[in-house]
Image (cartoon, rainbow over all chains, first blue to last red):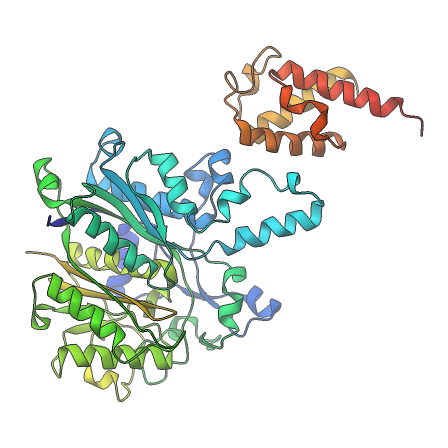
Length: 406
Length: 88
């Protein structure tokens, strides 16, 4: 088994479009949630959403390249190229069989809607245009990145609901650990548009605090009333540690363990044991004990049932003395398919910049979260061994242990 | 619209759609090798021409046999002539 290094990261999120801006927002505990009046107008329960500012796909790619890419795929390209730049891998060093692409994504809804709208408007398929078929597939990220970056190894997208990004980073790490790839550009992306969120809003799962967008996402807080959808793209360059050291790369951290499990239970309500089985596996595969973890980057999305179940699962693994716990979704909203990957990027940013970001909007614990050591204010030192939790519909769980040696 | 105006309109529409430098768009240029288009671009080329000139292009009209920019000029001019010669 090979050790797996993180040598580059990139992010486009509602907290900013680069490491500096996102790092500053995380440290200050700033929310990227806004109220979108269009959502109320078309019949949403909740107008709240994460919003990405100042991102023009045409600043990154040509008109032809953008034809086959929805916005979130271009954001994945922007994040991936930032990550590659940080890793200092040259173009030639990634154009080979040993470099792969694995991203997490579970929809390309807007493109699917647009192609049918065009057919109905224009009356014949040939007037839909050449790009829509590529835009509308969930694998649009990896198929486009493969063309643009010209990597020649693994190239696929993992769809596993809100654990997609976590499984993508985990599987990328496994491919390297097992000697199948020397490096993998991985991550997750999530579309932000009302078309992709309307049926989720229909479940009544979103927060309805329209007068208080920044206070709406409040994971683990007793007064939470639902999640706020967000999105963007997160990317990492993972490499075999020995290869990274050989070429003199800066090692930001390591993916030490990837544990997965599934609930085998309800389609939307998390079980009492699923997440803890994945947590235990990740910690064990990392060669660590629960007591070695000093920070949990929680999945908690601000839903009443989901956060309570995660809190109980964490307590089951860590007992009375849990590590520091924060859910960054308090600032970003729930980045869904992207979230498992963005948690790894955010944790790496915190390790690089020497802090642990708070779980904002946590005013009062409930019975379950009272047992967790929630980070209510920024902690001015970096995390060392981090556990990132993610979980998705159907009861799929992905847990990652990251180590940032000092 | 004169033939020259039609040709200019074709070139302008193609330059905009495929981000091609208009300076290099001479009639002998081949679409694939010289102008860098591919088979997917031909799908969009049909939409560009139909939108610009408000006619329909059927698959049996030999659009896929077109090789050069000059072939497109000739195709559109012929199509316009055919349509204008139909008694209304």
